[in-house]
Image (cartoon, rainbow, N blue to C red; front, side, top):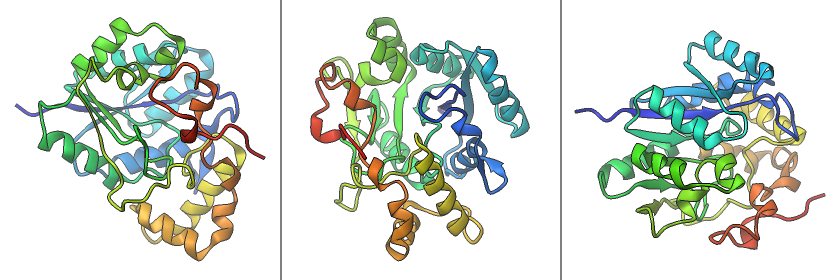
Length: 269
């Protein structure tokens, strides 16, 4: 029997630092549309679901999902773990991928790499990701979990950060789950030096520049293509360089036992 893969993309309008970022324009389409296009390039057959909240402000997310012909699940605003689980259950997932909506430059080849590992070792792991520890350029976030793993996390997680960020309960409790991590096969670690995700206006300008440079000639451009572009045009790298290494960990170092201060940037400017 075929394994049903569901990719859940959490998206909302009420971002605290850059409200409405997922609907900002990239080459005449929304950032969310461009990101879904990247996900649709993976070689594995998967159901993509946009998971947003029931807040009225997120009606536009549902409208965008309808426009781009991707199913939309609406659930809790703040309990993203529950929203993730309910979306996966509604679409009868066997395994669930968490791909954040702030990763429009994600390389579909990296998603396939993590999926290939999971299926090569099928039944051996509850959770496979590429973030613990991270080595890929920030914005290539892939986390795979079985439905049983996700359900166990939903039943047992209680801390606000576990509910808000969906997967911390899993990777913070390796004694409860069978976990594997995929490292970047270059042997390099660009997780703190290269930022391909969006949380600030400078990130949007960076992403827009990358799409304008690469997309017209090669819509399925790779992580390597981006790095080559940044070598050729270092001024693009500099657009959001000051935010490289900035992530949500910095606000929870006293709560996370598997994350060290070296895995986040505490100040920027």
